[in-house]
Image 1 (cartoon, rainbow, N blue to C red):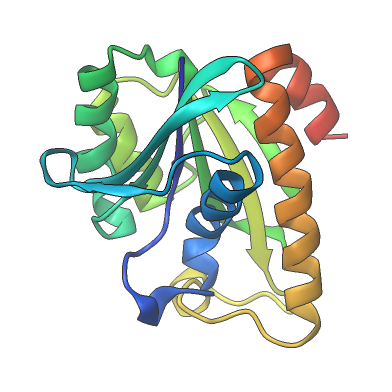
Image 2: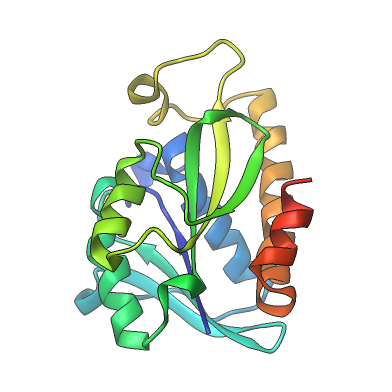
Length: 187
């Protein structure tokens, strides 16, 4: 069983922002794979959808915490479903990667991402999968000034391509495993 988490700030005012790209990808995954609608779970501080992708059970999680407190939802969910951290896939924005770039990694440092740090503290390890989605502009903008900006114009076309590529990876992870998916996704 895999836990796939889409990081992003809850609330309509944050929809379409760079910080919420993980959340947008997970919402698209729920639809593409025909999984049940997300339902609120107050105990987990999140919205949850459970089902199967390619015959493998998955739990999709949208934390209802702000990104920097994501561990408050991820930690309890791993424990509630008895999922090992190595079967955790965290989808999040990365200001060190240009918009359009993606990277699947395992067991890496947080690189200063406060949401990832929160998850690492909650699960007491960095040994989990991260789908890092590039959100940086060609003309570099400091992360704190960038993450709450909405995608605009031509960026929206690039975001659609990122979502399509990420959905292919989400479909491959449960069948081929993250290692093989990493080779394809990072190519």
